[in-house]
Amino acid sequence: MYFIYSLLMGLAALLLTPYWVVKGLRHGKYFSNLKERLGISFPALDKLPSSRAGAIWIHAVSVGEVLSGLTLARQLKAAYPDRPLIVSTTTITGQTLARERLPFADAIIYFPLDWSFCVRRAFEAVRPSLVLVLETEIWPNFMREAGCRKVPVLFVSGRISDRSFARYEKFLGAFGFFLRPFLKDALSHASAFLMQSDKDAERIRALGAPSDRVIVSGNLKYDSELPAPTPISNWLEAEVQRSGRSPVIVAGSVVATEEPLALIAFGTLQGEYRNALLVLAPRKPEQFAAAAEFIEESHRKFIRRSALPIPSPAQAAGRANGHSGNSAIPNDVTVLLLDSIGELASVYRLADGAFVGGSLVPSGGHNILEPAAFGKVPVFGPSMENFAEIASRFVAAGAAIQVESPEDVGVAWIELLRNPQRMKEMSDKARNLVEGSRGATGRALEKIAMHLNGAGR
Image 1: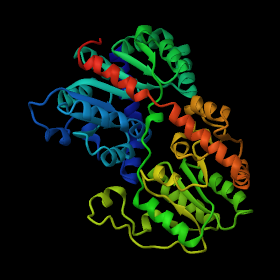
Image 2: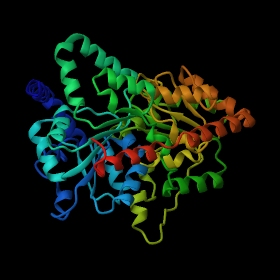
Image 3: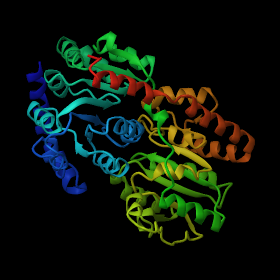
Image 4: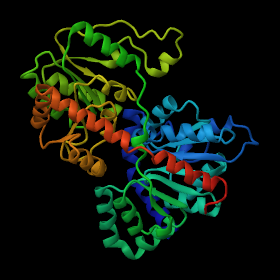
């Protein structure tokens, strides 16, 4: 089974090679991390002592997983200081954020491609005593290699979205004779599945996970620490106060082709609030140029965050005086394009209105807990399949607003701004719902301790 799977992976890679080459040349993707992904070399691991203890390996595929696992990673390093903490990501944006937010990690690497020779080399280089996969990335060859080496693999804050499960069901319906026993065997190599909800637990069991290893332990995202102010958030706060710009609207995690919809929503608001300022934060760096074009096409004046003389959080940390530069927002500028990674969460603190992207187009939505933790009412569109449980909880509790169109987003902001008492009540509910749902990190730490101490499988 694994041979056939690897063969199909190789065929897929061959077919996708032209796409990867074009993307690599155009956006600088794939080539820079290819040696690590093939397991050829891991420069960050070469710096570790050869006599080190077995590592704790955390895999966080991209930005969302890095942010959700930050508290867990920090507490693991504090609890097991003698064990190297190794963090892997798949995406470049996740890698960049991990290097910035997890300076206490002993090494940050790219996750290997799921061929046996790549995975084997990665295990030999990392030398883990335990692997933690944040959320649910199932890589069969990786799982089998861990099983052969008797390295426990724990899925933490596991989830299977509506879209992913529908895709699994579709392929299982067509190729169940091969996929069902193959998935069951791959999942049998995991030691525990700490799932976010009952529905997620049911779905992982349906895919073949051993029932006795599946538990519901909650969502790590609720345990995320409030981000500290950044140079850009400090500058924006001072500039808004100086210029009297209000309201400040933050449209975060906006995905490709959703930028014009966010601008339409903002235009609806501008009909009543002419002095408003929009902070538009695209989800990925490759969207930055297109987002700028969309803003220009809407005939709005804007400034890029990257053009401001303000250091990034990493740059500011290396400066003795933490100087954040001086600049002003011209009166005719209505949009600040946040063309950076890792600064959005700190800017939500300043929002009078918040929109969470990936939801007005069929993309599955993004994390609404970032604004909610600051007591900001998340407004989002109909596509929230990737965060369905969280979205439904917040809407049912009166702590968020789900709408159908960009115009409705603008109307939702207007109605909240017109009614400060309603906004305060919803803000308090959002913040309290986040606070009351914490605890997944503690439950994960208990399970991890069992396996590191040899009490678990």
